[in-house]
Image (cartoon, rainbow, N blue to C red):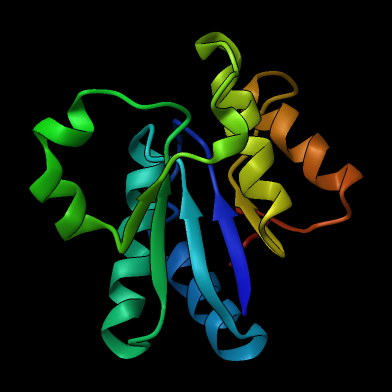
Length: 150
């Protein structure tokens, strides 16, 4: 069982085909069957959509939404979350984390629990850069869609 996480809130170029190709590659060549996503922006939505496409062929593939903290929307929109994700989790390690620090800690949790990290980092600062630097320290395999030309 191998996992991949993705995260970046915004994007400035079309990455749909790249996401589809890399997700297929990770599933077929690296036995990745779990995909973690933070679900906090347009790019996360595109990643989730690509994983859902792959799930049509690779039935055992799981898309898991990792929330940094509980919010009432999880109950209010329960049917949506059940339809869109195989599971929604809030890591127990985040239980006592202040909500302002929870997103960064959630990102670290996703990286810690993944073998591969897909990103779309184009700047030298921000939360996505912080996460990628953390992934580099943890020696994770990183695919930066902004730096690849596929």
